[in-house]
Length: 120
Image (cartoon, rainbow, N blue to C red; front, side, top):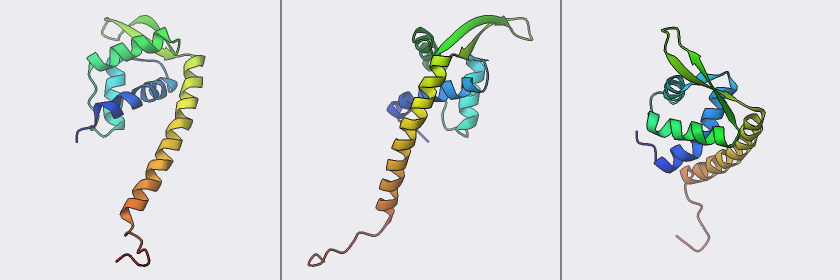
C-alpha cells in the first residue's frame, strides 16, 4: 500500500514524539518502530527521519545526546522534552478531531443514499 507523502508528513511529528514519549531512542530504532506500528505499511528512510529529528530539536521538542551502542559504536539518542510532551498532547487532540470527522464521513459514504421525495 502506498501512503501519500502529505499524509506521511502530517503524521511524522506526532509519531516521533509519541515514540519518544515511551523513552529515548535513536534513528534506526525509530524507523523500525514506525515500521512495526504500521504493520510494515509505512517505510520511513533515514533521509526522511533525520531532517525531522533536527527540526524537532531546533524547536525544543527533543534533545539529542551522544551515547555508545552495545557494539561500541557512537550513536545519537533523542529524548522528548517537556515542550515536546505539550506539543504531543496538542497534536493528539487535533488528530482526534480529524479522525472523528473522517470516521463520520466514511460512515456516511458507506450508507445507501437517502431517497429525497420527488427525486428518484
